[in-house]
Length: 171
Image 1 (cartoon, one colour):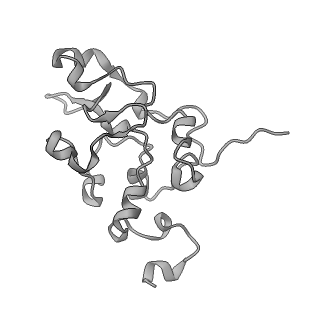
Image 2 (cartoon, rainbow, N blue to C red):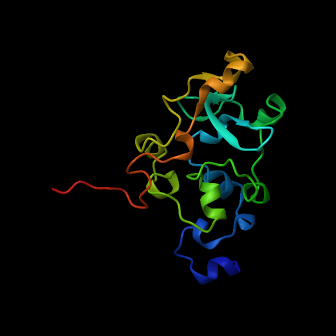
């Protein structure tokens, strides 16, 4: 047993391990499968401000909200960012709901995260994923049209998704 698990072995790994100590499997499981990070982002040349669009990466499966060629994504999309603990701590454009970002900031995962809920579909049921919200993939539109697709919703959580606990109905 390692030092970080000795202290609280009953806690889930994301509450007891720093990002750097996670196994590859644990690291990958922090992704909630929302697809928000796979939306095209535009950066203002003067202010460096980032704006999200409702345009998906050319490899985004906009229904499943995952990469259609994850192992080869960087060869096909050269500006695809490979997330590492160091990179996660420096990216201002990661959605505020991102599991990597939450853990890096010392916060907990939301109720709809698959690691908490035990179900990969809760991210969709909570309305957090990009399912049904992607207007087009980046290779389907001319670059000059991207500015017409700027949206704010990727930086917000739907009502009810922001709570740390799942809302239940009273009997």
